[in-house]
Length: 363
Picture 1 (tube, rainbow, N blue to C red):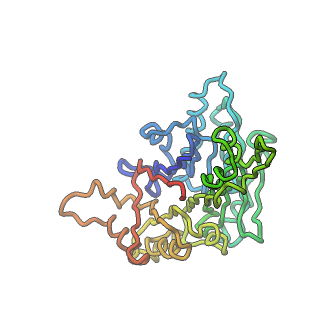
Picture 2 (picture 1 turned 90 degrees about the vertical axis):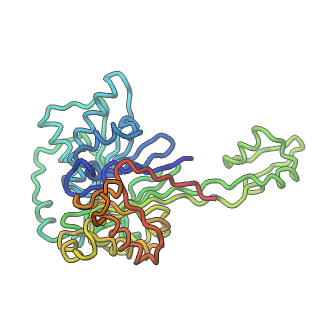
Picture 3 (picture 1 turned 180 degrees about the vertical axis):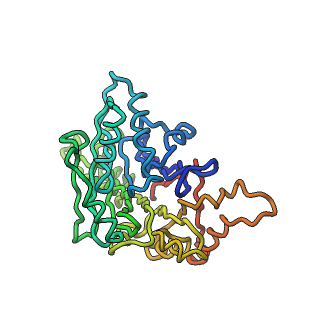
């Protein structure tokens, strides 16, 4: 099963001609999951090889505008492109408390009627995820005229034993969220592919007399077969060790994780996507605003033993390396050097808009 990640926006605060606002797409077998949706995301989608209509799930890390303001417009465009007669499964949207109200109010005030249903699952933050005043503002929101049904989904509480939020548990994937510290409640997401069946052992198949053909497919899919001689062959008789699934972790804005859940969920991640808004020389400023530097991101990656670290969400002062002019100091490459120094020269990737990273199947 092919799997890749496309960066639609890699800049902080606002979209610019060189970096769009935050948006990442995980694509697997044609289905797309969108992580954050900053202003201009739908335009970035049109410039990419992705199709907005393929988006089935949307995950919002936090409610700052550069991660959220593109969502209402994107939903409207998907609706327009779907047409009134095309049946569509509900789009599932996950994010912090307040997201459901934001979407509903936007649709109501703009008199927008989507041709497809959507549900919003809200994650309830804990008191240690942000400064106290931010939580007080959240608690004081007026919900008197909130929708009775439209967009209603689950209210997801922290599992204190796992220190995580269970969002999705499907046939192939499990998605969990973990807590981050930022100026307002923020989350990271861990997408874990479930173990797949091992390869068929050709020698054992031959020894047991299993004929090539449909029987191979059944055994591969976990179904026992009965041979002509009456012998029952079980999948465990002929399958090799199950193949470990892939893990992709995407963190929202943060100056650190809260609790142990993030480290556990990101442990040995195949791909860890972490923000690095400012360079290490501005670490105090970064922390003051709830952000990270390359050193901070790399330290977390090292703690998690992540196999590949990708930095993103750069201040707009850091232009893509491909646009660096000859003879000018390249501040963006300095971010890479700072992270690699922590990881003992393990290569670190600097995300650019429209960069695609494939995550190969494990052997």
